[in-house]
Length: 316
Image (cartoon, rainbow, N blue to C red):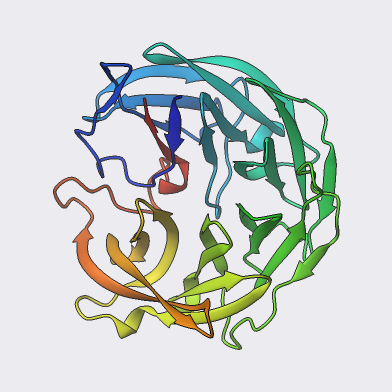
């Protein structure tokens, strides 16, 4: 079975190859141009452009993360300017356009899970059922956002729920039905830090959500609708980093974070401690730091149209 993994740094695994069925399969990195005539750009693991494919729509989204998502043989890309999500399918060594999925309002972020495609729009989140390699054009669930003021940033999937960041200082959850539809009302996450400032990028694993508070220079751990712990970026040794904008988890421990000041990527370890038989706390410890232009790492530069929120890695 082919597997997609989302990363947010083009050169992070520049020479990675995966063996499947006794043959080496190409590693593909996909990103969106986010221009008026939006395009999906497909690179190999060495950073060579292989394909330029029209998304049949318009880009133009900003202040978001997770604008590209991948699962099995599918890639989803937001068309903010034309109010749709473009779907692509892997065929052999490349990708081909499959269809457009219309959205209720301009989409900013996408995520796969529970046999659904979840689309975070400017004012709501919607769920679309997946049938094999096809996605239903009609939503089987819709939930309005708590703020719904256009500050929606990213959606992620945890067990039986969605976690959503709105930059107007709201982190919320939406419960899912047994079949994965998003029909419940949104609920505010509890114990959000008093100094919350611009919840932005997030990444999920099982019941855990790691979310950046960009202008507070913090990363919070959310579980079961509560913020369990928050770590300040200034608590790490080394260069002071500000405005964490995205996160990615790779393997059992590493946590990758992108920053705008200074532009760069930080590699961290996630340490979990037991409390009364349950995992109640998760702390971060910096393992390494690479600034933009460092060997093998692409930075998070808000001046570039190819934002890191638009990068995914396909492993055959």
